Length: 210
Image (cartoon, rainbow, N blue to C red):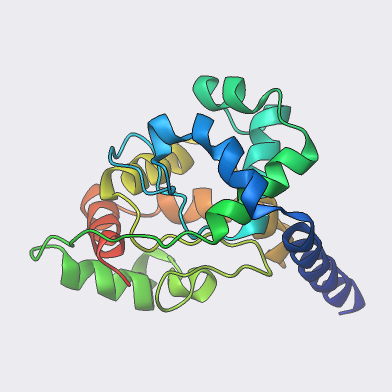
């Protein structure tokens, strides 16, 4: 119990520290380099690149650090962040966190199944509800480091769930810290238990969720 409380306090402390240290105005200047892929305000036009507008600072910082240390693999991003120092990353995080995310539209044929999975999970497959970690509106949990996923391109969400399913993408530190049984493969396990049409339905639902 004490260990759990300590971990939670540490996560909250990190989130507050990162936000306090970030200079959004300087981050806006740095973000000009990112605009070609992610848009001037973090709302990318292409599903090949994720929307990062409104992303919480802790998750953003963790992902940049993961690219830098190689624990998250993407040749393009690893090249882009290689020269960034800790302050650069925090400034970028502060800028993007302040941007207003835009939203797409869910496929009418998929939205009901997507909503059901997002809110209730898949009991027969052992898949927990997405909103347990990402919130009822997909806003994420900034203190715990769970990302905002509402409004994300459906194709990008599908690609990331498939990356978890195949093991190409590792789980996030925040997810690992929340596991109570020693299993550090939460997102991998969830994606592995989902069928293709279930992944597509959740991704479509999220694209229109706000």
